[in-house]
Length: 227
Length: 373
Image (cartoon, rainbow over all chains, first blue to last red; front, side):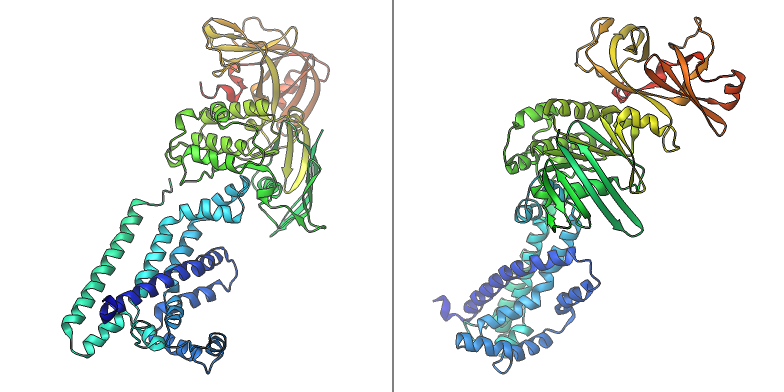
């Protein structure tokens, strides 16, 4: 049974977490990146700094404040508990929230750059041909910036898979719920079970390498033609 | 006749564009002005691509914009087409897909894509990626795409400024043909008076955000001769009399007695292949212009001159301009503008109502129709 193998269970949890996180990141990150690309206000740098914060902040700092926020003593955690009847901290939902915040810059930044490079010219051309905002997004923006969406989604997914500090702080180590590959690996190392640790580490290494190679390959096949 | 009523003002930095004008929704109206005169801003306001506008724009009784009523019809709902200077084709689509983009969003399609592809001569390019096209080809696709959206008004924002002379000539012929075939009213913005002279019926001149002139293209160009803003010229629209193929000349009928010659036009209006040495082409009118500085005056008829255009005329006005004089003459009903030196004016003792002869070489008659020859 797959579910009886704790490492495979961690793999499934990791995959679920990364998939859900990536979908949410694309849903949140796309409008945020668009807003930042169009933003002309001086406060743009503040929003950009806020989005980029997880790049420089130790994951444990973010994890610590999230742990406080998601606990029943504070408003977000309390509201969640009142509505669902369950604690938010140390749940799958908690690690999704943490992952989304932690991987946000990996999705927003490539998309923002792509939208900035796209500019308004082709969008104005679309407007003059009768295309509304949603039509323009799906038939002009998305196809032209497809490579950046692939990059953003892949980076968001890969970064979520490799998460450790945030997940440990707000998710703990609950098998089938919050125990992901990086935490399983840490467990094996702590228990001096280097063979299992090696298997997990190597598979993460190879998996990440394959994913990154695929990103570069996809971007290589679809270069942005500016001629 | 329906109109485009513009009553707008736009201010940014230290520049203010203030336009109050009724433009005909018929033929091609040229909008001329130097850089920073507000041409493109005006076009963007009509298109709905700028919101920082006060006033109103009414197109054929439909209010597109009224700042008092807080009404702003979005660009995509105005049914106005715009051909940009830089074509702005969708790089991820082929030529055909770019055209289909317009067709799919056209609310009441009357034109067929096949007809427009033929009209704009795009058949050979239809499956190509737009990034593989030359500048001239890209503009032809942009024009075809704009037409296929079937706009009530087509705006052209310096559409030929990035093209070489040969492509400009081809595009100008195409624009004229499209306008005549499909009868789409057009507003054509350019800083090139030569381009506008070739295709526009009316001319609106902008100067520092204000309208300085508006009216018939030839009349306005002649009015501009009294300013320092243009190279002084005579703007002509004359019927083609014949093509003298063996001599490399085309003759235009000036009046019953007079004709003028210019280098053989390369692209004949009816696309006939030249097979005879002399071809009559009376049904077509050619736009051309002669710079005032290329015309000279003589008091006597010369029979032994190599200059082919030698026309009897009468002086109607003499205006001194620094070291030169601008002399207005009439060859029967046709006005010509001549610029000669003040010294020559005195030497010849020229005065109003004098009968004189004007002369200019065939090569002094310019038309963008033969730029590709």
